[in-house]
Structures are given as C-alpha cells and as structure tokens.
Image 1 (cartoon, rainbow, N blue to C red):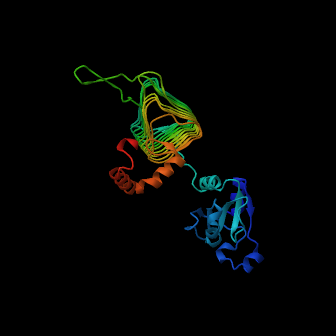
Image 2: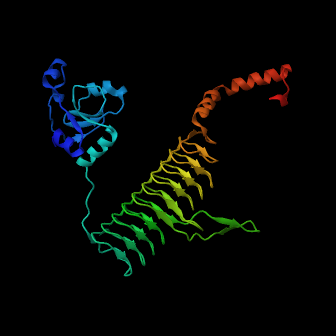
Image 3: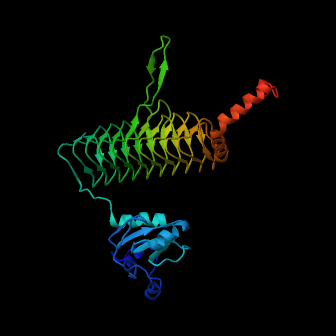
Length: 356
C-alpha cells in the first residue's frame, strides 16, 4: 500500500521527503522515496525498508533520524527528519489504526457446526458463527453477528447484545447480561460463584448462595483466564468500555466504572467500587468495600486498603500518595544504618526508648 493511501485512510497529513534536501542530508536510499510502498509496520529500531514505524516522544528524535524505515508516524510538532512522515495529534493511536489496515480482524462465516449443542428455546441473531462443541443453554438470547469459537459455553438465561466475540473455552454463567461489541478471550469465566462462606459454630464453612448476575456494558474486553464473579445480593457490574487484562479477578458485587483499565493480575475483593477511567496497573490488590475515585492511578504491586480520592496517583502497600511513597523508597535502603544510629543514641541516654 502506498504511503499516500495510508495517509488518506487514516486522515493524517503526509509530509514527503524532499529529494533535494534528502541528497544534501545524505539520506539512506531506502528513505528517499517521497511516496514509498509500505508492506508492514515495525518498531522504530527494528523497522526496515518498506515498513512504517512511529515515535511519540521528542527524546527519540535521534532514533527517528537514523531509522531504516521508509516512513515514520510523528506528532504535529515533532522535529523534521529525513524520512517521509505522517503527522498526527496522537502517533500511538494512529499507529494502532495503521496496524488495523494491514491486519484486519479475521472473518468467520455464518453457520452452526454440527457438534454444537443449542437448546431449542435459545434465540440467536442473524450472521452468527457457532463453532465446534459450543453449548448454548435454555432461554439464551444472543444478538446479531456473534462469533462463538470452539468449546464456548453459555449457561441458561444469558442475554448478550450484537457483535459478541467469545474465543475458545470462554464461559458465561446463568442469567448474566452482556452488552454489544464485547470480546471474551480464551478461558474467561463470567459469573462464577462469588467467594462467599459463613462460618458455623463448629468451625466449618457454609456456602452462601450467589444468585445475582454479572452485568457487562458495551465495548468491554476481558482477556485470557480472567474471572468476574457473581454476587449473593446486588450485582457485579462492569461499565462500558472497560478493558480487563489477563489473570484478573473481579470479586462478587464489585462495580467497575466506564473506561477503567485493569492490568494483569489485578485483584478486586468483593463490593469494591472502581471509578471511571481508573487505571489499576499490574498486581494491584484492592480490599473489599474500598472506593477508588474517577481517574485515579494505582502503580504496580500496590495494595489499596482505604478509599482513594479521584485523580490521585498512589503507590505502595498500603497505598499512599506517590510522592510520599518515593520518599519512603529513598529511605528504605538506609533503614539498617538509621536503626544503628538510633540504638547508639538510646544507649548514650540522649533520649529514652519511649521518646521515639
């Protein structure tokens, strides 16, 4: 595909190589074509002739000047470079859209595989692809253009919107509600029983029923082997546009606001409330009943044991303001030395044990 065609498809500005200027700057031959043929995309350091790359940070200007890529996606104010450029407000997003041009989603022909088991009471919209060994239970409703790949299981009473896509071995449990354009990656479990047990007088654990469904909004993606549990009362809710990474646990009765991002191995205890556009990075844990306000960010491996204000950036376990945590971290390597000094001062009698 010609670079000019890519620019038109992405609705961005193409800044072609000026051949006279290129010769003066001794541009690599592969970077000299003002409208090169692009065969694929790659990273700034790996890209070669015929490939398109991107850079969004001015500190990588030197890498952009030396790249062997035929063209580079850059911001509107990025310094001029010898290669042809596509100028845009958001290079990263534009690169993602360019990838879609070369790697469009795989299409699945409508039809039902002979090994699929579909209850007679189920209602499935037009254009559905039902793969091998799929099981669809009683009174299930699925909208148009669904794709259910091998071994997907949809329990009774589930309601799902249009353009649903479930990869192999995804499971949706009884009576859950899922919006349109939702993607479930391999091994996802929606609506398994919440972890609820009451202790008996004899010290045994008595299982608490978990009948309340999971409700998932439109445009949600849940990635591989993540679990969203159902609740005993109320509902577990995942808002529109939420993206959930691999190996995430969302506990019973939790609410996750619109466009929140839950990264790998995040764990939400029951009844937590996560605000809109919150980012919980890798291995963050949130204690039950805690609230994380809109637009807050929690950094990796942090433990949230109390409410977090909207817009906050927090770190550590228990999580505190990120700047305070940086001070903690700077002091931590010196603790043995500080403890030694304190012990020496105590022995000298300068201050008593209770004074510190």
